[in-house]
Length: 504
Image (cartoon, rainbow, N blue to C red; front, side, top):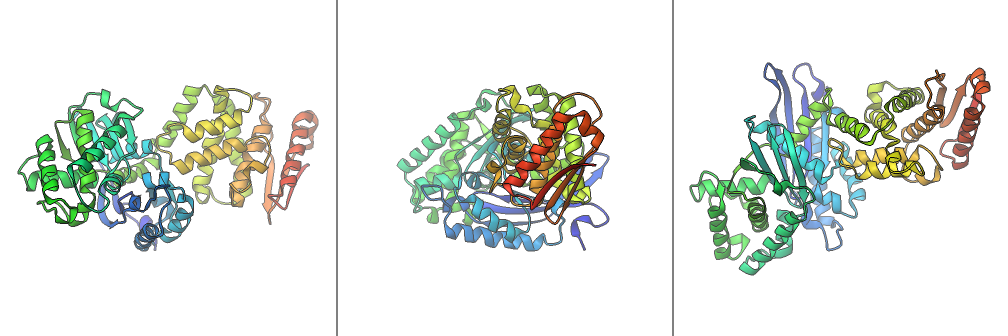
């Protein structure tokens, strides 16, 4: 029986592949008069310290990969009864920078049983704020949210559910602990170097998070939780403030080593990374002018769950991102919609499967068709290359890095030669999406509103057949010739056993 589709409240699952810990959260979606909320019903956590496995050239070592795979296999066992659309797994900073991330992810996805999306720092920040916003009161006051992870620190300013500025700094508790306290020894000199490194990372932020005023600050995730617990249980403070930071540092220096450091509120597994986390938090207080900070339980995994709920509604943030890009770049929406409708119809014919089975593939094709000409905002010459560049690097809230790369690849594939795609598409559905987009673009090349008959597209035993009416071909000799040339291109590259274009 499928646990995530049982009668009653829907179950969703989020997997957070953090640079320090891997977390699984399962939540029940509840809808009442107050709106939609998620009730956590189960969670798992494994201390993997993935960032500690990066060498000086950003290669993940075998030991850290083994720890990660073991954790994901346990999560996969718990998720065995979940439908694919009810689970979202996201990778963060370490997987953004690891040079062997692609090979690791193939094994990791097999262990988990679900796809893993590597998300950008901006997307991570958006999801963190989404999770925090659902755990904090909607008080109309401006707040700073700081999430210190193992390899990066996300900083967001917002009011209620809306963000004003967000960014991701390349510093975290594991990275600094490994770099400045590698054997666990803690000295004043080492801490000052770690603090300078964290400050430099915050100063390099591209977005003016530090320029915005806020009424109060909250921290999410392990470092903030540990420091706030120390503030309360060891020092009797209501919140984390500058005095608590200084007293915690003094205790660390007195202990001289992470293994000898003991304060009320600190769990043993946090000791190896506390010095690095303290340096990042101190730098955040300095950079953003924080006076005191409280802990918030909503974080990335909570945001992923709420984002999954949003993807089932009209407020999917990815749709909002697509619309904003269309408006901002002046894309010809009427033309884009014609290309989209034809591409989706061709894809559906060739796939010969129910829409719900095509899922994410079909949705990405839809958005790629709408955004395919975004590169014309730079130049009409080689516009497909410009489109691919924009879709790879633009800030697109809601989209993972993997999804943006898929959009960019379709944009690149919409015209020109096919050999550039070799090795980048590994199944027939992926190639079928390229066929659908290229043929749709050719059919609407004249950009007029004339009714273009829908081609018939058949894919059988890796042979593809495209059919158009004789009368249409007679009236449109240029477009007919373009389709003849397109079939020749496909036959030359040999992706399908045969590509036949004929008129009937």
